[in-house]
Length: 197
Image (cartoon, rainbow, N blue to C red; front, side, top):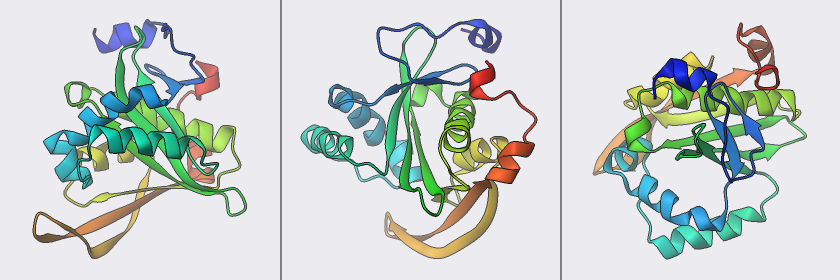
């Protein structure tokens, strides 16, 4: 499917969609999605660049069950218009008083590099600022994760700092970039919002 076809295709799936972007839709993540999450989190590129420690399928399933009852996070399966699941996106550590949250994104390896991650981040930012009282959405990634840094920059996130030697991964200390998108910056973005699509 070409990018133009993605732009024009409505999202159709048996899953109940709760939000959409330009080319993707969001459905609530469920315990039945544990096998997908396990595969994506076990991918060597994701494990290295994001710093995930691969877990057993049982552990992933238990984590999904536990997270379902958390009120400070929203987890979504990212779907193509034909209903194909291509990733997971979440708004976590939501603080409704301070208006802050953090974004997490994991894409299926075969759908990376096609601007679908950027569309998903745009859509989640629209949810955070258009439907929730967020003032600041943060993202954190290794400074060497060029794919994630590119996706976040395209979505309007600004790198505000680096936490030096903030994590240990594969025997090396790595720096971690901290990026954010503020409500005023989101309001200034010249793109259609999710509810205008």
